[in-house]
Image (cartoon, rainbow, N blue to C red; front, side, top):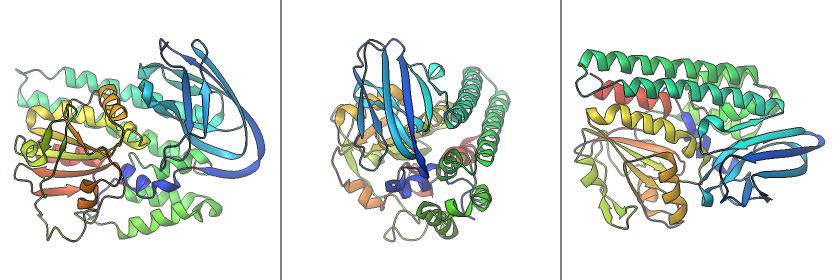
Length: 376
């Protein structure tokens, strides 16, 4: 059986197509922004091509405000931020009208609003913050002296909250299936099963279904099968043993992947990068998963495909990802080639001997798998 959730793996399998556009007559848009207690930030970048990560324009910040005006021929999805100043890449739709932005290190204060698509995205983000807070509160209730029954009940409640968020995600995608937000959610299926993805694709306008990205997704879903199909053909039949590899950690010390793996009952090998928007959006879920299951034997090894050390280190610090991180800090990662990885985020789940138990799992499916393996 193929995994229930394709999450962002599919989205970045064809990440060179990330820019979203829809054909309309040309229009004007304005961005009015405020920064909350961020005096060091002097400029922000607008990025629409995440494959290259090159900004298409720079916005100057004056005091704690910034303004920007543009003209476009189509609604475009892009990211706004500045990782050099630890400002996460914020998703934003460039559409006709005045877009209001609040940037803060406090996720609960982040806001993009003022136009229809951005308002709809904001509602979804606020729901995410709400259920994230619920889950964090549940995690904080787990004490060293909590009984196994109490732990299991809290874990079940946490999974229930994630289920509610997944339902909101699906309904938002369904409601907006004829516009660019619906397209974005379907092509970034954070909480969607492959069955839900196909249901939503079938509801799309014919013109949208003809987009190469959607056609590629449909083909990928048809061919997708659980296991090691993203790893290559040189690892043998499952259960395959993960080949060992090494790279410098955040302090420049060489770390062996197997040395990390041997310390845990189960380890998630998480391939990511600071320039990868979906990876950064996935990180809070990984942090929650680690907090919830590390006491039960879960470890995470972050393998970054970054090339700039400062961006990598800032992203780790910003997200609170306290597990071991390594990176070759060079283009054309040898480790990524070893596993045949051409899409991130991507995960491998291995036991303490390095046997690969699953691959390509993210989101709720990853949580379900970890709960099944380590839940009491």
